[in-house]
Length: 77
Image (cartoon, rainbow, N blue to C red; front, side, top):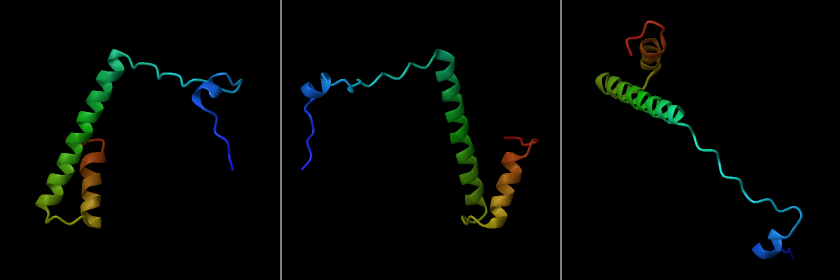
């Protein structure tokens, strides 16, 4: 049988450490996060549109074409 200390007992324990709050992200970090999320959603919409236009199947050929279109350095995306 195991023993679990109550919150009051744990608060006075020498090994007890309260959880630290995560530091708030700065303004520019939040803006960058928003831009990256928007770009990711746009890329997902483009890939979904491409797959729909090519018959709705994700084949090796479609995967190569998606990589060519979206991951190449000269991509319009």
